[in-house]
Image (tube, rainbow, N blue to C red):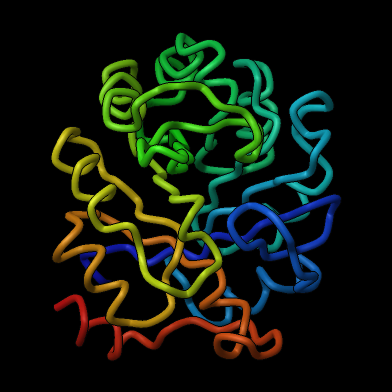
Length: 253
């Protein structure tokens, strides 16, 4: 097993697997459960499913979909989407999911991080931090699938989330997401240097070298892949895939 985790991050919208670009336009990819089956065959070590349905924040987690995914998935699975309370987290964990990923609710009510961590352990709580650069160049945290400005500094918020009990930080650059142009290495490095918990770099991976750079130059503990694992290549059609172990060992050591 690799020391550095490389994790497919699948986006779900209204029950369908999709892929976005900069949290905006999206392309249909396929059925999420079928995709999970393929990742089982590819012997992926871990998986993240992020529900970006527009009404998820008000309707709560899609427990039927979550249960279906948990039944199909042979590897540890983390889920994000509509987690607003300890009861929501409890319902998700009851399906067999190993980790919950919280974003909007964590900013709205930071104590939720500790409430979940106290019951299920910090290792079961990932705080997702979405970051976008403003017109004047400053990077701030966004919630609501990138639509809502918070004014929070990403480094300060990552430190606070870790202090409150987050076991990991899923750090996404909205400006790089879906572009295939590589990670925002400066952002990854600043957050990784500021916290003691693992940072999962997400948003922009387009090559094996990008994965290696996120770790070697950015200081990430893990890397989450979106476009690279659901498309053949940049600008080409759908092909669920995963880098082979030898290639990853060559780039990660």
